[in-house]
Amino acid sequence: MIKSAERVVGSSKLIRLVIDLGALGDRQIIAGIGEVYSPDELVGRRVPVLTNIKPKKIMGLISQGMILAAGCEDDGKPVLLLPEKEVSPGSKVC
Image 1 (tube, rainbow, N blue to C red):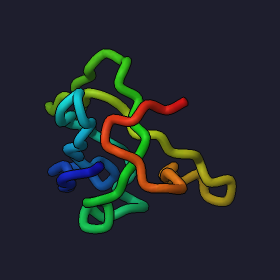
Image 2 (image 1 turned 90 degrees about the horizontal axis):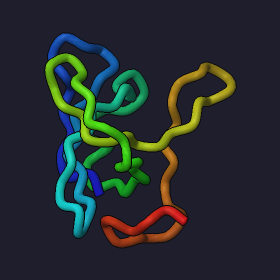
Image 3 (image 1 turned 180 degrees about the vertical axis):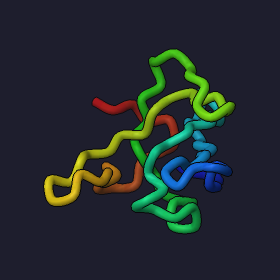
């Protein structure tokens, strides 16, 4: 579940997310979804997260994973993938 979200200074696309991943703890993820989503509407959402990738520095911030989104065919902007039912933080994607 997204615990906090804020825009990355100097970028119109990047948002810094802190996501609760249950037993894995909290992770900071830098996501390029800021042209579509505002930080306020992201807090509290449950999103699938890819965690088995190396951390990457983006605009001076460490991103410790990747949220999953699809590219909309009309405009190419990201659309978050959201679980149909409530799931616990840290649930595995299967």
